[in-house]
Length: 122
Image (cartoon, rainbow, N blue to C red; front, side, top):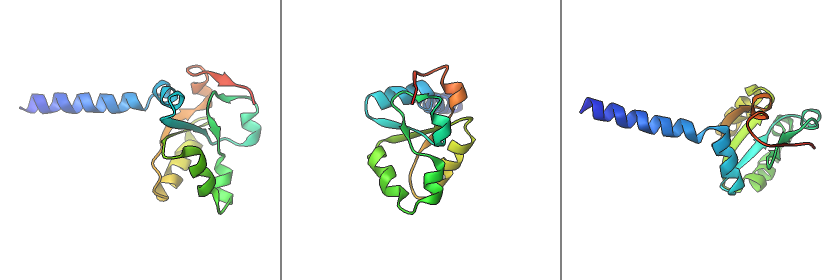
């Protein structure tokens, strides 16, 4: 019985990890089931961003009172995936969103993602 429970737990944890992969997030975004949000600043996105990602910088969340209305317009009830340059700021945004009752996942940094996912120049 313990082996069965362990096997089931392993199966479900592996499935959860796989759902968080950048490629899965990108596929979900293409199917309009999710949105990928770049939280870097304007000067950073000028070098490029993940194709089909939306831009919503951390500074907007920190400095604008009505950021939630704009954020909800682009997320529209979809699963939310976040990235920044290295993954640190997107982790901070994840925490800020969680404090507002908004679930999201950090898929890391652009420096790593650009080798896995299609990119576009701004």
